[in-house]
Amino acid sequence: GQSLEQPSEVTAVEGAIVQINCTYQTSGFYGLSWYQQHDGGAPTFLSYNGLDGLEETGRFSSFLSRSDSYGYLLLQELQMKDSASYFCAVRGDQTGANNLFFGTGTRLTVIP
Amino acid sequence: EAQVTQNPRYLITVTGKKLTVTCSQNMNHEYMSWYRQDPGLGLRQIYYSMNVEVTDKGDVPEGYKVSRKEKRNFPLILESPSPNQTSLYFCASSADRGASGSTDTQYFGPGTRLTVL
Image (tube, rainbow over all chains, first blue to last red):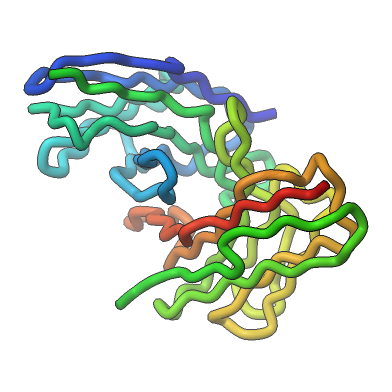
């Protein structure tokens, strides 16, 4: 089966840097994505890693190591509006690339 | 405006009364999915469709049906809802599914909060 692990909660100070880790076990792997979800809202896409290495999009960066089945989301210059839940998602299982599996989410609280 | 729409946004129903949640996207996306979100469990894929008339089961398909007769629409059908299907449901669409060189971006609808009594 598929399993993804990420911390349930993280608290960080405004202006700081925070890293949210995600480890996964899958029978097939085609990429790791990250989504942000504010309370009462829909998930929104942040980043995708199909290959090893770092992807940077503004204040957000995502990293993937396929050999370690590990990735992380790095948020820099934290702002109060970054308080939200963050989900990692892995595409792929034994049947191919059609299924997308989400972690249970990390709730980030940014404090002044 | 590019978007995914869902209706209704909120629904309270009783056990066994058939219901349909509609989903529509205006981005000409081929790939559409349905997810349910429950506290502590994250998002779980119910069904997905790779194109018109092509649908397949996701991680938790039991008790649900879908159809894809038009590219833009992907309704979720609960033939006989039960209380354990009380959840927050999201429809999503994407232009691809993580093929080489793609970004696998899922666009989510606003969600439908379903309560089955």
